[in-house]
Length: 485
Image 1 (cartoon, rainbow, N blue to C red):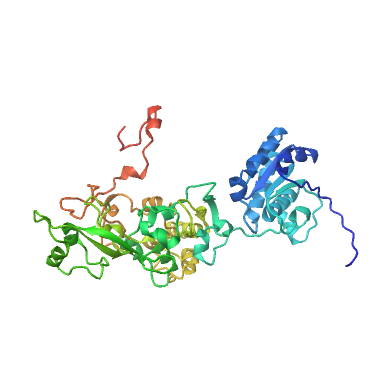
Image 2 (cartoon, rainbow, N blue to C red):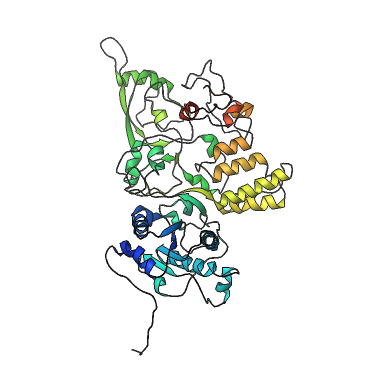
């Protein structure tokens, strides 16, 4: 072993619940107005952030917050932190988290007292002064809390090579997601896509603790948007479903004579399904009054691409039970209950590229130019889809590309409004229009299989704006035009 001398000017306070002392320690080292810097996720869900703030408040120390640090911290957040510190007259940086949060805090601390670009320090300029820094460490790793070093990623965000990385259970490390709603299965609930879309029997596919609701799905029109090679089609669960052991799932359903007669051809039927109505009657039998009885058949659990009704008002029908592909873009964690821990992206870099393409096209009279094509292809080629050119990239096609890329991320309504497809003649089903995805949109919301007399419902123009809530109107505001008071 070689001899060495070691000197560390860092003060370490180690022990259980030491975060409750951080206010006293910040004051001891000269802090009177603090920037609390953190990532999000665990420090919020565990209550650590609240305990830190309570300790500062107890010592009458003012503070402002800046969250959002990601693994491999970005320069963009450092610039934001520097500006916030200068504006708020911050004199102490308190990092709550792990190495990435501490690295980001160091960069901010140096940048606040420097007149130039903080990035100069990352190109070799020695750091001669900085604001004091404290850390509430959540993980023992590379020792950033006791070193002068810091690693920052310049350039902000980048597209993830794999589209589905942005939607994994642990997607907080995505280099593409810009602004997210944080979710946690235990501490910050609300991510329930799996519960809302999957069939009851899908509980056995993922080992879920509770049965899903057999709810939301998509249609053949949406599925038809995905071209050859487009990996985003895997956002949808289709076809025969299996349990975790690979056994095909089935569901027992009682079939009456009406349901037998209405059964569509596309439904995957049991092997013992009667070929004729007479055979069904012979199989089911009749009661004493001659009425045809119901017969239970074992159907394979197959998610179809076809949706025939919006609601199942005619009763429990097997072909409604499995209609529509189910949404699985957000990774489903095996064994989870009603809530998942995937964060929900409000904005991603992919959206920025598509907004850029749209802006360039609208500034060019609605036509694509080379710059618009390049922006859209950044997104499209990542998915393995065929590249656009100036002829194939139209505004209608861009609207469809936003549908494919941003599926179920909360953009569709405003996209349809902006592209002129939310109201009027383009707001109803038109199978001759390849950009029209509406189905079964009728004035009678029952929308059963018997559609006689029902008329397509054209959304009126005033519905581009939401109605005011009742309590707002009750407080003297005038309801938006078109809505009843």
